[in-house]
Amino acid sequence: MPESSGDPDRAMWISRVATVAVGAPLLIIILWRGGWALLLVVLALVALGTREFQRLALGVGYRTSPVLTGGALVFPVLAAWHHWDLVGPAVVAVVMTSAGLTLTAARRAGAPGSAAVDTLGALYLGALFAHLILLREAAGFALTVTLVAVIWVSDAIAFLVGRRWGRRRLAPAISPAKSVEGFAAGLVSGVVVAVVAAMWQAWPAATFGALGAIVVLAGVLGDLWKSSIKRAAGVKDSGRILPGHGGVIDRFDAILFGVPVGYYAWRWLM
Image 1 (spheres, rainbow, N blue to C red):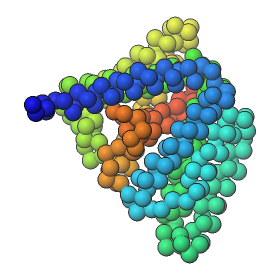
Image 2: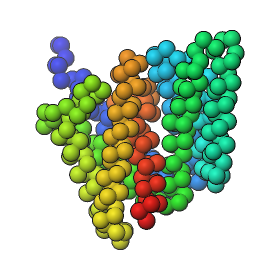
Image 3: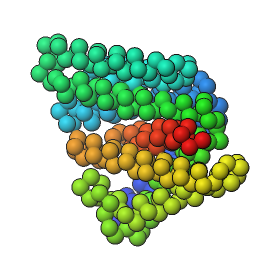
Image 4: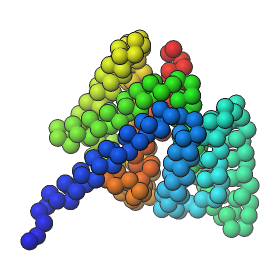
């Protein structure tokens, strides 16, 4: 008996829900524990993410070097070991090493693009992911989970509303599936989550409403940036490690932008 046309879509939904049902509680537990547990998880995500970024870069015609992964892994360690003051020298080391490797015969023809991709990938995945550790260490579990929840809920509501009622495309040249209606719904839901959490924790509601909006907007930018990379590389997903979602970059694109911006906005607003 032939399968109905809706079966693949239904299977995708089951995979997405199952991944969230397992992954979300695990990440919350890891955030609650913090310390070494969080560092090891972030390092694993960075390592997997850099492999995905390497494949994406290759799809655009750039061959990366070990600086991409090695440099990226340095930043979470600096954050966890309370040496973020050394981030400047770490960035300089990544840039100089990436540039130095392009002087070799094997990589000379691809300079400066190869060096730029190595540096960008290390900062994108290493330095940005490290802010999950910085936020947990500086602001505590409650605020970290709140900002992650703002991003997750906003992303989910935007997806559902855009799929059901989306009519106007938000960025058709980059991500045709995203709609203005979904974006608006995601923004409102993110602010609501932030305000409810603020009321629950006796934080200033107005301030956290603004923080929620800032984090959602940063997350949308991260999502569109990821989509632009994948479109340039000609792939649908950055990887296949997360059923129904794709790869690490697919799942954490909004967090990679939202958490760092939320961290600095929190420090400024509070």
